[in-house]
Amino acid sequence: MRSLLIGFDIGSSSVKASLLDADTGAPIVSKAFPEEEMPIDAPETGYAEQDPEMWWKYVQQASRYVIKQANVKKGELKGIGIAYQMHGLVLVDKDQNVLRSSIIWCDSRAVGIGEKAFQSLGEDYCMNNLLNSPGNFTASKLRWVIENQPEIASKIHKMMLPGDFIAMKLTGEIMTSETGLSEGIFWDFQKNGLSDSVLKNYQIDKNWMPKAVPSFSEQGKVTAEASKLTGIEVGVPVAYRAGDQPNNAFSLQVLKPGELATTAGTSGTVYGVCDTPLHDPLSRVNTFVHVNHAKEKPSYGVLLCVNGTGILNSWMRKLLGGSHINYTEMNTSARSAPIGSDGLIFLPFGNGAERILQNRQLGAHLIGLDLLKHSKGHMLRAAQEGIVSALTYGFQIMNEMGLDLKTVKAGKANMFLSPIFRSAFIHMNRVTLELYDTDGAQGAARGAGIGMGLFSNEAEAFEGLQLIETYEPNENFFEPYEELFSRWKKRLSDIEKMDL
Image 1 (cartoon, rainbow, N blue to C red):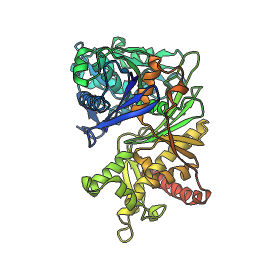
Image 2: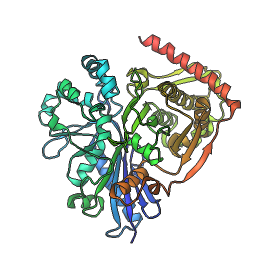
Image 3: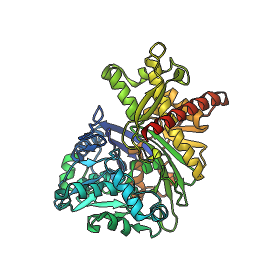
Image 4: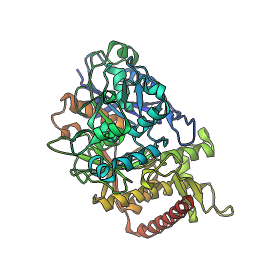
C-alpha cells in the first residue's frame, strides 16, 4: 500500500493541490483551480478582499481531482499540509460562520492604523520585540474592523489567517501557528509568545486568538462532512501549516542560516533564513518566525516582498489581448527589445502599499514612453525589468542587514519561466540562481510528512526534490544591468519626491 501526502497552497490567484508519494518523495499529480485567476474585490481604492468560502470551494475541487487522478485507495492518504497567502484576516462567529470577506495581504486600508500604533507602542518596543513596525499586517487589519465595523467585531469568536480557515473547514478545529502569529505582528520575540502590548494597544480580545501549535504537528483530523466534500478519508490529520513564503522556502529546503529562496508570482519575494533576530530599522523588509523555529534552536525568516510583480505581467496580458496571447508569446515579444528597453522604465508599484517603500502607495508608472521608438516588446521587457529592479532594491536592504546573498533557490514557475526575467535577476543582483521542480503545494505535502513522522529527518523529506537548472551570471552583462538599475532608482526617486 502506498503512503501518500496531500498539500494545498491557498493563493490569491488560485488554489493548488499536490499529491506526493512519501516513500519516494516524488510528486504524483498536481492541479490548480480555477483555470483563470480568482477575483479580488476592491470596494474602495487600496482595498483588496476575497471570500474565504471561495477558497474552500476550490480546495474541494482540487482535492477531488488529484485523488481521482491518482486513484487513491482507502488508507493510503496519511497526512495533509496547508500553505496559504500570508497576512490575511478571516473572522468567524461561534458557529464558525464567516463574518465578512477576508481582508487579504495586498489590502492597504490599515496603513495609518499601523503607523499610529508604531508611535504609541514606541520604536524601541516594536523593533526589539516585534522586529517590525505593526504596519499593514493582520493585527492592524483586525483593528480596522474593530474601529469601522463594530457590529461585526461584536460577533467575533476567533480571528484566523487564510490557512487556519481551511484547516478549520477540514477538521472543525480552530488553531494557528507561531510563524502565523509572527506574520500577523502578534508575536513578541523577546518573550517567545503573544504580544500582550499589541493586544492591549489594539484592544483585541485575547480570547479571539486561536491556540498556537507547531508548524509540524498533528492539528486535527478530517471530519465526515469535510470528507464528503473533498474526497479525503475521514480521520486523515492536518499535520503542517505555514504562510506561503516560509513554506516556499521550506519547499526548496531553505532551512539553515545563509540560505535564500525567491518567488515571482502575484507578488515577488526573497526570503532568507538566519538564527538571530535581524531587523531593518525602517521595517522595509520583515522578520518572522520560520517553520522550523524552536525555543532551544531559533530560526527566523527575513522577508522582502514586492506586491506588484506577476500581477503587473498579468495586467499586461489582459491589456494586450487576454486569452488571445499567452505568457510564452509575451516573453518572445519582450526579447525583441534590448536590455534597458531603450530607456523605457516601469515602476511596478500598483498593488497596494509597498513595504520596501515604507508603506507608501506610489502606484505603477510607465516612464519615458517614446511613441516613435517604443513597441509592445519594449513595454513587455520594461515591465519585467522593472519588477526585477524592485526586487533588487529590496536585495540591497537585505545586504545592509548582513544577509549573504550569493545563491538563490526558486521553483521553476511563474516569472522564472521567462529567460529575460531570469537574466535580469541574476545579473542585476550578481547571484547564482537554482531552479527546482517544486511548488508550494508540494512543500506543504512534505511538511505534512515531517509532521506525521513519516520522514525520519528533513533530508529524507527532500530526497525527491529535483534541481532542474542552475544559472550563473556572466560578468559581461553586469554593466548594462547596473546602468539600468541606476536609471530605475533615479526614476523611483523622482516619483517619490513628487508624491511628498
